[in-house]
Length: 396
Image (tube, rainbow, N blue to C red):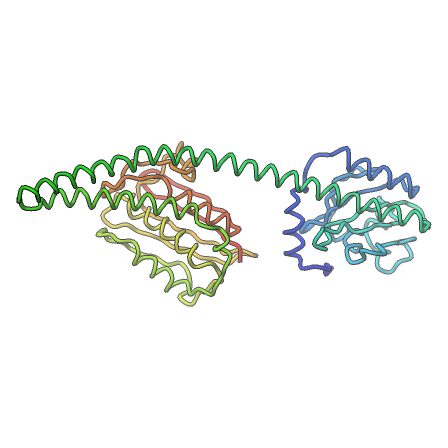
């Protein structure tokens, strides 16, 4: 049946509460007990309407923890926040008389339920009471049932806020650890090239004071050290980029976009590009974030390749609510025991790339962070000496 809100919005809101398939909780069981006692019904439930099922957070009088959506009474209650859904005798109701829950072993006859409405007005499920015989509830009983449905949502909101606080605390702890790592990186990876720059400049100053020719080698040392510092600082700034800027979206022609990213990858290595998508493919996304993601993945494929010709396969597909991309290469691959750590900040698999440039372990963590902000996920499959495939999604 057609639900009262957009299915995508409703499911996204429901899942934001992280309630589906959780264990029994005393507070919810107390609500279903009170609902059944007040209404004089042997069966009472707190149900949530998932994509293809209704799942019961609490249920009294039945053994099932979920039922298919196409036999659900509760889904019909979602559009009646004030009056709820009251079915005094389902056997006589044209909408439910042929329902397997009525005609089958369950033998449902009476149903009364009020929807569970989020703070933003999205219907997530219902609190309901059920009987195997006709019932007529008083106004007081219906009012009490509606009030109990509000209590369920208060429990839900409190539970969600507790969860969000825990997520925030975990994020702060992670950020503190990252800052500690950052301090260590600064102490080692920035101090060393700064010492080289200072030494080179001291020697250049002495040469100028003595009237000697400027040593090009000293200038090269200074330039390489400055480039190293700049690469590290730019990487760190990219990782900590303001996330608010990443939600602005625009239409992007995929092929010209990818070719533009390729131009950013400065390399003397021969690359074989293979595209597995239509030249006319378009997406609606944040171009800056997507550019950083593809640049890091492609740059890594080039820098950590070991073949005379680096092959990069680029895939694109549209999924329900998502864009999916794959970046595959024929490079060195990642050892199995390292795969789970490659997205950790400042963690490296190889100390230097094929050009002798030190890896600071910022690129892939930046990629994962950007994809998280864009509502997607990233995974990796890799075989040593054969290559790596990064698969990621972003929300449409």
